[in-house]
Length: 318
Ligand SMILES: NC(=O)c1ccc[n+]([C@@H]2O[C@H](COP(=O)([O-])OP(=O)(O)OC[C@H]3O[C@@H](n4cnc5c(N)ncnc54)[C@H](OP(=O)(O)O)[C@@H]3O)[C@@H](O)[C@H]2O)c1
Image 1: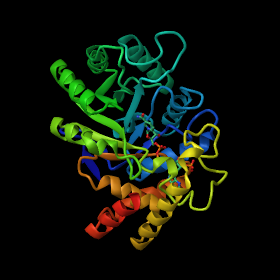
Image 2: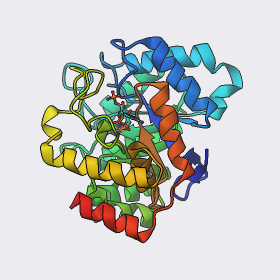
Image 3: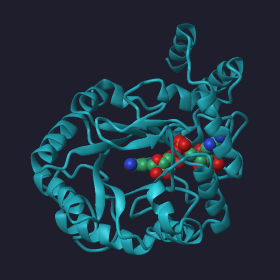
């Protein structure tokens, strides 16, 4: 594993980090998730990403991760891993379980710590920008989370370039610099190239790219239809069937051929493609099996793209 500095901070993060959005809930097989986390750590993946609402049921991924920690990461091993969680999407009923108020963020963080049986998380995120709450309030909640020792660093996710600019300036004024931005980025979703990555570079904030495989589309999984053991087929999965259009499958097939010519799987090429931008600290992957995880880690064997390959990829993406 190689570790990149997260923005201009002191924290190093692995080039590949593991997210527990899918496959770690109470509906999933616990031992499978436990094996994925153990294998990830053995291969040098030191960063695990959660959120209050990961499951299903919401909260159960944190509860399961807490059990995995208890079974496998006792004592000083806690000091060898970076755990993040977030609040920002709907979590509980009533007016205080959603969006970006101080009330929601700080009570949610307490709940997350309890579920994972932790004293602190390494990174606490505002999961999304709240247009109704003053940004100062949301940022002050992150600042307080850090000052109270319940989080070591603050992060934001899904904020656009302008919101990020403002949020990072507020956090800087408060004395808790923004460590990291978590944004969706893959060959299929490239919104952040239009300004956000420039802001992050200018502000010295790291970027962790989530869904770098477009939830599995950028793998060899959907080359010949929609398999039963896929996220698109899973009623709890967030990959919608409408996203797998004929046009997209043609692109996936062409990208797969290009990956083969590089002696990589399509998943490996897709991860390498995101990591080629040195503003990206880490790719934040999901995996439903240890085999997928191992395949994805091997992407690090070849992160180089010739200019011809890059041109060919752009031509396919259109
Ligand atoms: N901040 C946010 O708002 C936000 C939003 C979404 C996600 N995230 C974070 O990002 C993490 C990753 O998101 P993601 O799971 O969508 O990432 P992803 O890496 O794009 O997709 C992961 C899925 O792709 C399939 N896959 C992975 N490797 C494969 C391989 N080698 N061959 C074939 N299929 C493979 C698996 O799905 P199958 O089930 O089909 O096997 C796997 O669960 C989440 O866990 C979460 O921590 C954050």
